[in-house]
Image 1: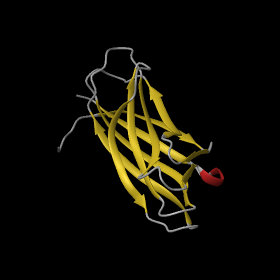
Image 2: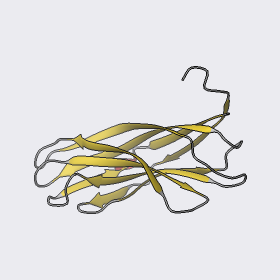
Image 3: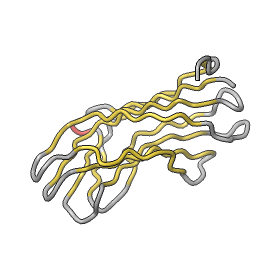
Length: 149
């Protein structure tokens, strides 16, 4: 949409703390931002840049990411999925920064916090796949552009 509104604030977080996730698990990558919106009825444009090392000991390392949101520390809702990224064969690995984006129009009340975070899993639990977020201290960033109604 053209003329979507006025930029109220850019909410930002960065992490270099690594997390190792292996098949068949699904877990947070440690990339998250929590904030109180500037206004009610805002639209949020989320851009996440998830750094990590995609690895495989058997089969193909296809990694899945999930854009998650929780309101007021409640149960996280999956907003979007980014499936089958990678495609490295046995014993290969690759450092990569994956760009993930989403437009969100959540329903929230005054004073409630929003949390956006990334989870990682794999296309199958049957093989030796792994993802090390923020591998070797590589930074991951998340930007949330809050646009006024």
